[in-house]
Structures are given as C-alpha cells and as structure tokens.
Image (cartoon, rainbow, N blue to C red; front, top):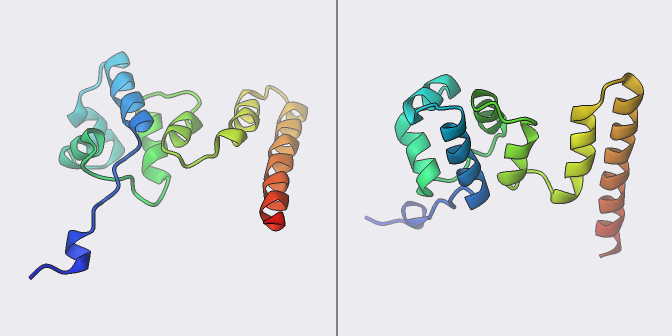
Length: 126
C-alpha cells in the first residue's frame, strides 16, 4: 500500500556541496570508504549523498565532520555549499576564522551581529 509518506521524495544535497566533497576527496586522496568511516557514516549513505539520491541530514554535525575529515578550510565553506549559511554571512565568518587576535575576532563578531540584525529588520518590514 502506497502512502503519501512512502512517496515523499528526499531532496538531494546541493550540487555545490556534492562537487566540493568529491573534489576534496580527490585532493586529499581519500576513498569513499575511508571518508565514510572517519565521518562515522556508512559508505552506502555517503555514496547516495554524493550521487544526489539522498538529502543532507537536518543537523550540521555531519557536514562539519565531513569538512574535518576532508581538511576543508575553513570548514564553514562546506556549510555554505550545503546552503546552511546565507551567502551574506560568509565574509563575517571568514573574518572570524582568520582572526589572529582577540580584537580581530571581536570585530568579526560585530560584523556578523550587524548582518543578522539587518536581516531581522528586513523581515520585520515585510
């Protein structure tokens, strides 16, 4: 018996996410099995994720773990490719990642807060 839930399609992982993971696997010379093992997922799931048969998990933990395993720097880049971080936040996140002093980090956090407040104001106008 087919129910609407059984027919529900799983949205596929964004193309940019899949492309970055595949490219980085080649760059760091890691097999699908090795990446899956180190990320704590099955090779079948990773294969389906990269082929577009599966969507991303709702939690960002796996995405960040993949970034760590694949040595993606900054790791937030993979979150951006996964469409989990709005593009407008990227400069502030990169500033925070590259901060060399406490003052640099504080300034980056102010930039990030300003972007978030600006977005909230825009939503409030609608």
